[in-house]
Image: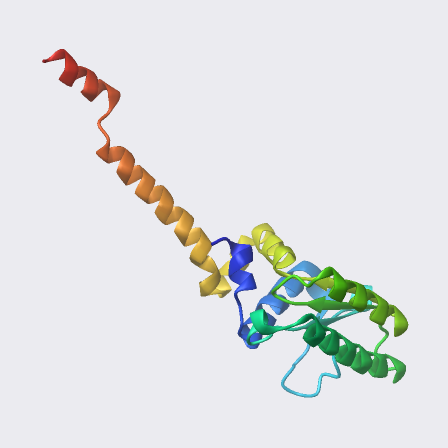
Length: 182
């Protein structure tokens, strides 16, 4: 299993939030504000200051059981909260990005785009493909997430196994000596 697939398999919301916060903090440095989600966050799971972009980080506990309707309800509810936050004047918001472990269907993406536009925002979606790409650019970040080391460990073990198998095979010189001595 590769890193992207490992991220897709995440079903622990706190683990997913930690991964997202680590990646966005590295990518945007001081332009990213991590938000404490244990208190009322008003739909703000992270804020990219330079882009005036709110992140909605969503990791369902049972992602395979989620339907397009479930995603649409989550998107609509979160956008409503963000609109209220924006209208209160507390934060200037121009963009809204929905971050999930899994890809969403085109139907859900179109809904996301239209709903964000309805509320006056530019809508976007990011998922495991983006997150794994950011990890590959900054591999040292993986040290914080032991479960994501599995693809690298698997490739190292495979290389070691191949080396061992190669050692077990007779070399051409040895085969030649054996044949010539008959």
